[in-house]
Amino acid sequence: MNEEIEMTLADAKEAMEGTLDHLRQELLKVRAGRATPSMLDSVMVEYYGTPTPLSQVANVNTSDARTLTVQPWEKSILTEVVKGIQNANLGLNPQNNGEMVIISVPMLTEERRKELVKTAKSVGEHAKVGIRGKRKEANDFIKSLKNDGLSEDEAKRAEEKVQKLTNDYIAKIDSIVDLKEQDIMKV
Image 1: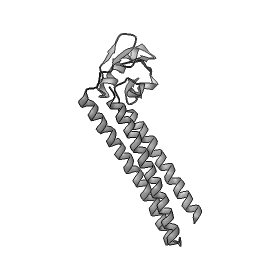
Image 2: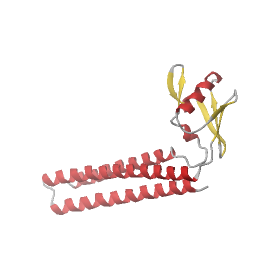
Image 3: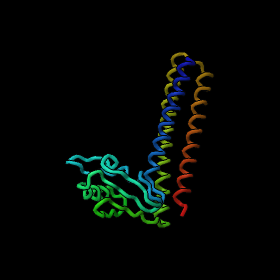
Image 4: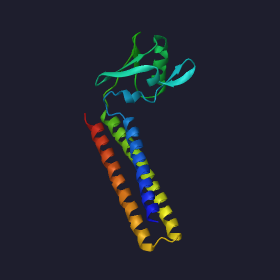
């Protein structure tokens, strides 16, 4: 029985770690006023009739804190790159200079910063819901073990370990979201 409990705890921890990784990826999409190549990760470009991620048809770089440059591998798709960036609804205005696409990232207004903080907190809440879901799965498994002969005390200790794990990951989520909030509000 103890092996099953340890495996359940390990599975829950692994799943919670996956939720944390997902949170970090989602928060990368919430821009903090600086130009980063990851801002364009969601952009799809029509490439020979097939929607293709921008990163597979061009190099995306930052020339400074406010400017992104997109250098397509084929000049013939420059207009498709511009169209893809506009269709992604990122609030960016791409400029085609015949060689590459240049994007000036506008300064964030105070109001927009507050909206982005709300978005970051919302993403954090979704991650917390995911963590709580993993806790419920682990506790349900422990209850099924209790029905199969696990003692009351062992079940209680296992549930306490699951709760401690949950609390640790909720605290990690809070600190990640707080750091993102500070990053967004920094002018």
